[in-house]
Image (cartoon, rainbow, N blue to C red):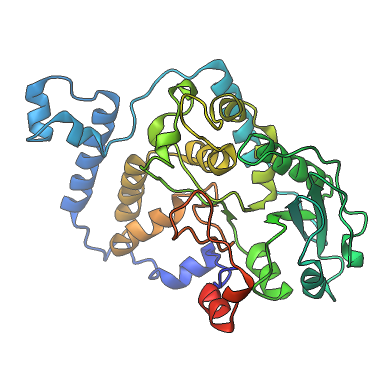
Length: 371
């Protein structure tokens, strides 16, 4: 696990960060700031709704071309398909549903394995003394595991065959999530491979995940052949190439996001049908692209207009120097971090991340990973 303090900023914390409200009668308002911000807001809104079409208009916005100006504007509005509308309604309702409260919140550790877990004894030491604060779920795709720890006995779920690089990897992830969601006390869900080992003690991991307000899903833009080069135009209109993302499949996820994944069929079907090894001469691997792209498309919002509105509101009430800080804090209400707390080394720039062998393991390596 990557070391970091569990981060959570609430209104009480912001009260200490922000200056106390000043008396309106004594406050000198820089009216020109309010006017300027208002004009910028109007400019962005008009440009978004009615993008420039003629060459003369383009020249006003950009001396080179319209493309330069449009590159930093939000995408043009298009009519959503029936499936997209239905999907967004379901997701919005899930996000607006109050979180399920639990008197005994647990973390679900979900192991995606071929058979037995080679590091089961290490995980046994990790879990010792913390009974009732975790649950274990194992998806064994080829053979029934032989267990060395009582914590793992009878924790296998109904599994199916998994082929590397195919949608069956995503199916196994969703199968694990479905079984873990049956326990209402499971509030956070961690996907692990049979080669994963804990780098911190249980209390550290538990506090880090339980007291954060975000899910950790690796997601980044890769313009190379192993990133956006795998994109298929068959995914249009729901998935545009500029929204296509890549990331390691290992995630930690809040309950509400796990429910959203289970509820999705629209974006899943796109990756099931059009993200395959060897399709159209391209090797696309759904487990590396489905969740990173799904959550990126879902959480995409018009930050330009949103921040502009925030700036206007906070400038008006007198918090000029803190306006942008506050708006950035409010920008991501969906709670998705575009990185994972699971260490994966892609420095070798291969199809697979770096594999650590016995000769590689040292105290210094563990220190470097956990720094």
